Length: 361
Image 1 (cartoon, rainbow, N blue to C red):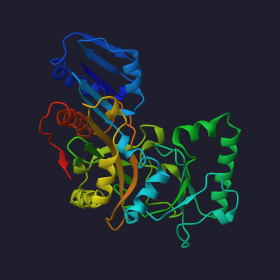
Image 2: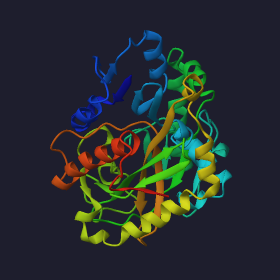
Image 3: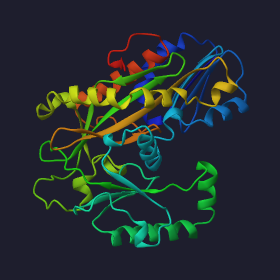
């Protein structure tokens, strides 16, 4: 039996690989939308099994005759929550890899509960724990601004029927706010940008791989002509904020970033040093207990920034699969990278091949 599941927007990129995988299955194919789950099997797959598989958020799941593979964000589930990322890094002495950050109660209602990361002034980034794609980020300059946003959000949470109860049931807690120092970014074509790379963990063989072909995502609007304390989101947000407005290219296309791949590789090796590496390798999916022959993979995207001194910083960990950009979006090299990336991903996990660009950390 083979189970193949992929977020729908990635399907156009994964589809050609199904011809290789299809040779290993001989009977049925079931298309299960909207997440596009392909079930190829010689035997009937029960509803209970499908339900069990879907309980684990995943990028990719493949199963064959009891030797199963899941690619999910399980090992990264804590790092994917902004406040827990800060706490985990602090616990392993890795707080230097992120901009100086303080954590604030979700329901703070007094200025004494607001601790600024620095007293040097300027702007700060206030991040909601559950925000993504730039949503949930506010640019603030004072405790008063922070408190106003937090109080409004807390009131909305209390007033939404069962929201807090459901959140606490799902996460076991109410997430905190993160208040982060604004780092002066290096600019490319007068725009702020961030770099995205991918991390793959093979729990069966206790190995961690990093993807060495780096995406670059540039902000919609130029940064160089504005005041340093501006809070214009089009200038600061570099991942589109839920749209395809940002430009996406590969690092190799930008001569301004020549040599930065070496800095990033060194940063990633330092980040995944033994304490954090051991922590990640120890975090197994609960599916391993239901299917003891499973081969488990964890997968996440790292968003990195490079400051004006060419120092690399970790912005966030994406433990849930991001959607693939629309066909034709981004540079030609970016589109080619998406295909190569998917080829490598399936090659290393399913076909036991030798990937081009995933390297062992």
